[in-house]
Every structure is written in structure tokens, then in C-alpha cells.
Figure 1 (cartoon, rainbow, N blue to C red):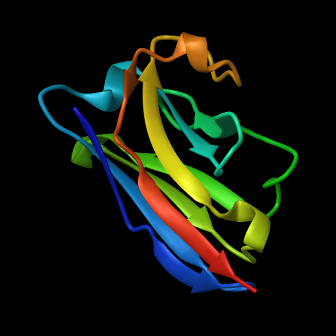
Figure 2: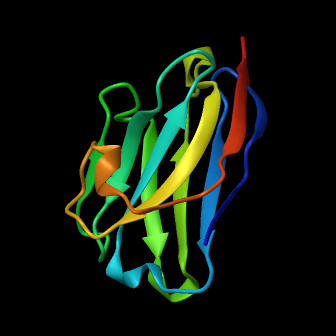
Length: 121
């Protein structure tokens, strides 16, 4: 089970850190990813990280502003969001998959329920 936390309301230009905690298993065997879905839009890829954290992948829209990281011993993945914009407003989902880091959500097998992030202008 994956449970996201850390969402909320933040002003444009501010920062927020999302967490994804896993229970009932270990994330050590999985590539971890973050996706988001804005109102009226399809879910889209945000970031992904390899099992060991040695490689990451980002969407062009967040590259340079967001950072994905993981602490396997704590069974937790993070998404540090800096310089946020109103366009970052969405429900953010954590996902796990036995795959290389990929933008394709079909490669991820387990999903959290999501956490809402709202960026005010």
C-alpha cells in the first residue's frame, strides 16, 4: 500500500515536499514514480527514480524545479517541489513498478490514492 502526504495550498514561487510511504512491502524492489492529474486533464508523468536512487527521470515541465528522492530503509519516496507555479495544481500520485524509470503509467503496478496540491497565484 502506498500513501501520499504533504499536499496542501502553497503560493506561487513557494515550495512543498510530498512523501509517499509504503506499507506491507518494501519499495527496495521497485522503481518509484510520481504522476499528477489536474482537473479536466489526463494523468501525466512527473518524475521517476531507480531502485537505488542512482538515476532519475523528469518531465520537461518540472525539470530543474522538482527533485525525486528515496530512502529505502524508511520505505519512503519524496518529491521536493520548488518554484511552484499555478500549473502545478493537481492531485499527485505515487506509483511503484518493476521497470526501468519510465513515463508510461502502464509500467507501474501499484498506486496511492493521491494528495492534492493547490498553487495560488
